[in-house]
Image (tube, rainbow, N blue to C red):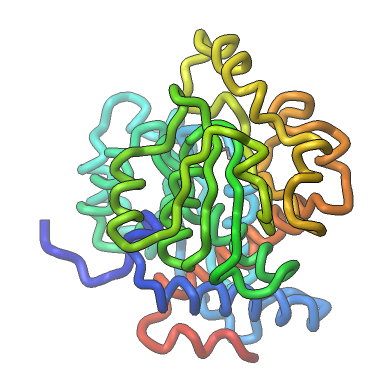
Length: 321
Ligand code: CP
Ligand code: NVA
């Protein structure tokens, strides 16, 4: 394959610190611009004439709808595709799909149960590819999480975030975020459900302040945000479900645990939530919970990622009207 000159958004480790910071700024500007206008179409319609394929091999509510709405608000055309209605579902290769779709569309967003499929799609596509979740990471989600943190608590640099529970795809992206946005990340996960060793090694090499702490109470101490996610992800084996729920029980985010975090700490969860498992209803519905702002910010953050990927070197100018 020819090395491609376009930008992919595959993982937070693959985008420069400065660009990530500027994408967050643009996401905030996208939100402000939309709030100030009754009709939410971006005044410059930066994606006019562009078509973006949203390809899903796993269920999605937030990622799918926020990308589709965001693309429309930027003046572009989204096409939502499910892999079981594509020839991929009958065995056509990712390599051929990448080369065919590159001739039709200007960008692809992929959610897949196979991390290598995303890498292969990106390698063989001649248009930008955006990660819409893999078993290994969920970087677009964590961009919305950073934006939400900053909206509620100010700049995240130098602050402390606690991750409780499964060391899953979202946790891996938080580890990369800790390195790129320079915040402290305390992770409390059971020994069998640790985050990726490679991702940890990369972040530590970057000088990230990441602490693996066995006690959930220790992990949340002084934390400005407490974050968790489902104990059974889409890529996990359902047969392991009972063992997972048992091992993860001590990491539940409940009122007593939240009371050990900093005063006014926020609670984040990418959703969908499993009330009574990783979080209690009391915490989920509390004032500290900003999970619906977090969900909304997917829209604004995704618009910023699309503009970064598609609008060339002066992409930042789309932050103002
Ligand atoms: N948080 C998230 O990615 O949600 P969906 O699975 O609904 O897209
Ligand atoms: N960790 C979850 C996130 C869902 C948005 C999963 O992969 O299923």
